[in-house]
Amino acid sequence: MRLTVTRRLNAHFVDVPSPLRLASDRHGVHVTITTQIPDDGGFASIICSGSMDLAELEPPSKGLPLDAARESAWPRWMSDEAQILDVHSLAGLADGLDHLDGVLEHIGSLIRWRFGLSGRDSVFADFGAEVLLDDGQVLQLRPIPQAALGDDRAAIGEPGWSELAGMVASEFREPIAHQLLREAWNLRFANPRSSLVIGVAAAEVGMKQLVANLVPDARSLVEDLPAPPLARMMKHSLPELPIRAAIEPERRCPKHLHKALDLAVQERNAVVHRGAEPAISLRETLVAVREFLYLLDLYEGNIWATEQLSATTRASLGMTAADE
Image: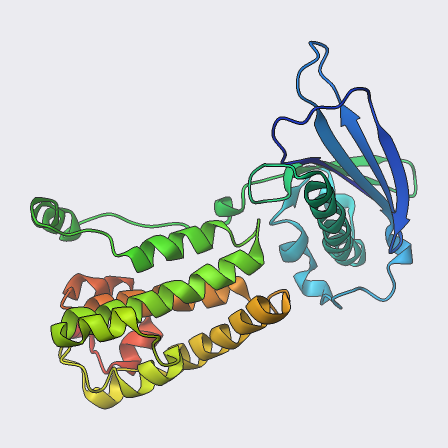
């Protein structure tokens, strides 16, 4: 099978005097870069296309388990005819998509850097992909929004809807930590490194804000001076704070959240200091940050935040069904 992915560079206001074309090979991928100028002579588009034989990708760059192949490949690309592919072909397709993405992202970022191009944070806007089967049949793959997978589902109902009236009438505002988390969540596919850095910052900001709100005398100290590492504050500060929830001190720092956020900070440091790509699951990390922020909301006296906590966290806090 031969896989081809074609992407349009996220770049604004590109002047090109005449159509340009460049072809190159990188890591087993044949790359073609072209510029397209509209008939009216407006600003140009830059198209990057990568093509490779999946049989040459040996061994798979991620060693994807066969039973996870469909789940891995299909969150980003759909095809009505894909049922004809066996599970081995699906594994190769999923791994090939990742490999092609990496090569094209590298080249696209070089183009933006070299020519000082402005554009959205993500290097590419999805354009299209196709698979040429050995028998000559062509499968067109269609990209779908990642949010369609169900990660972003939420429910609205009572008594929360009635409680909202009181919040609207008061001085309630969404905390900046939650705003940062939303930004990190929306970047998790387009820019994983920025997503991780902003996500960890959300947890750190949330922790500092809780201390400042519960201990007003410490506000200037918390806001003006570098805070201790997040994991240390979680372990040592949460049990000592005058929280506004009936949670025993020894239960206030759930071990699973402490472990997840400590690892996230280590990965963030690797990204910031070495430019490394995140080596942990961004989804799991950001879900842990979200859980932590709603836990802090609970500690600040917002009992409704319990609704947003997982069963694992509620059990760690010693909550029973009557508390929920």
